Amino acid sequence: MTDPNDVSTAAVLLAGGSGSRVQEDINKVYLPLGERQIVSYALEALDRTPGIDLIVIVHRPEDRDMLQAVLATTETGTPIRSVLGGETRHLSEHAALEFLAPYDRFDLVAIHDAARPFATIELVTRLIDKAAGGMGAIPALDPSHPIIGRDGSSIPNGDLVRVQTPQVFPAETLIAAYRAATAAGFGGVDTAETVERYSDLPVEVVEGDPRNIKITFIEDIFEAEMLALDWEAGNWV
Image (cartoon, rainbow, N blue to C red; front, side):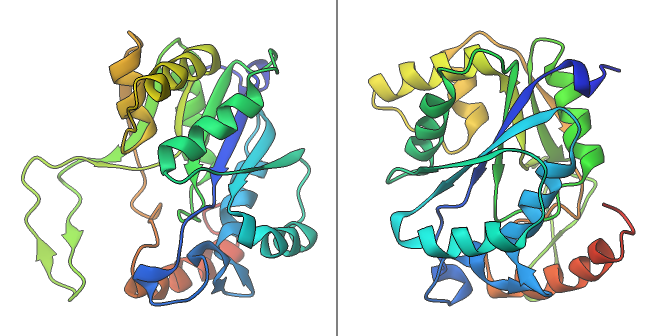
């Protein structure tokens, strides 16, 4: 296994969403979860991961004050910078990558959704280790993990593979792929799609974590509250 301290990684935390599907008027990543905000957990996870030397938070202009409040109350040791996002996920990712482009010391870039508060150090480290071998690394849950519907019932998932974040790629290849994609007017649904279309980089799937949920609907917050209790207790960080 690669020593993560031998590989320099920059992490991009995408925090530019909205609260419409959780029936809130504010960006969902700033909703309370336990005694803090959702984004605080995602930030903490990246901050604690060995080998991550910079965190770039992508945000909306109207969220600037809320972001500053989170940063003021979240203890971190990793340098943090913030950049304004674009109108789409793809453009927000590209904005962060252009911010990172002048830095030539980063071997890898990890792109993570702030709406996934519980990415563990173990998961992020496995992704960095895989990407350090000269490939892209994305976490996913295989079909053996059941999908639970919003009504609590199990949904047949066939051969569906559910992709998570963070997704980790060599920095130079990732930046070049996004420049090519944006020039062509292409916007992928996630980072891997853009890399696979605009580079020859192999992308491998790493086993994800079922606790690494994405908060999309109001029901997800209820599940996250239970997970937060274990997280705060240090049971599986």
